[in-house]
Amino acid sequence: MKRLRDFWEQDIINKLIVLVSLLLVGMLFVFIYLLANLPGDKSLIDAVSMILPKPSSTHADTLNNTPQWTTTPLIFKSTPTFLPTNTPLLISTQILETATPAFALTSSTEMVVITLTQELTPEVLVNKSCIPNNSAQTGRVVEVVDGNTVKILIDGLIYVVRYIGVAAPENKFTGKSASQFNSKLVYGKDVSLIADVSDKDENGRLLRYVLVGDTFVNLELIVQKLGTAIDVPPDSACANTFNQAEK
Image 1 (cartoon, rainbow, N blue to C red):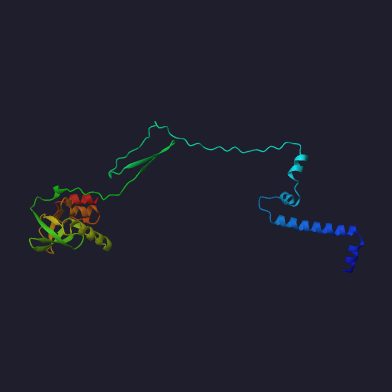
Image 2: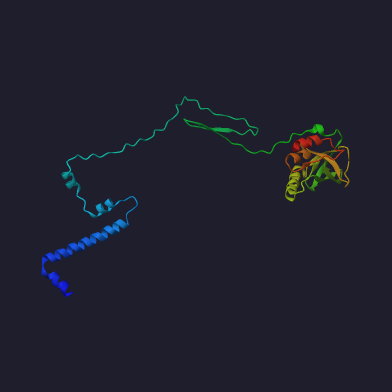
């Protein structure tokens, strides 16, 4: 400490040397810090320029006699193009089986046609030509047993009626759906019953073709895939119709 104090008190030059040395060391640490924290797109020259003092704009203009030009980028704005009022718009209309409307969105460069479709349950065409020309009975459905069996009140008596030519699904979930759909078609409604050749099956159930208004219930179940077409002779009058509906 004494030597350092003697060195400091000897001469002004010694003091200047110490101050300059400290200043250089400080600038070195600042340079190293800036260099370590430079972004990826900065270079070593950028670090040096950050340390060195920058001349003022007035002094720089005085030293540089070359006139400074400022470039202003040109900005082009796209102008929307509008169709003239007398330009006809082409609208493509498609007539579908579901009779759903078609809407067209048009622009100056292309035409996009969006067709809205809706799934509809196909209508079952009643094919009564296959039903035998036997006398019809009329009764009211009082209970739905399953997908192809119901209980019907006829002349004050209840009969179990099995649909001719259609087998109910054996799968538990599909069978439940078939029973529910059958109930929707016939429960609580007056139905027409038409026999084929046989009157009853081995279990004593009436074998009948069933009609509710214009709906052929036997055929409807097959078309909706809630019943399977079967041919059990001699009751085969509508076997071909049922097979075609199933296909």
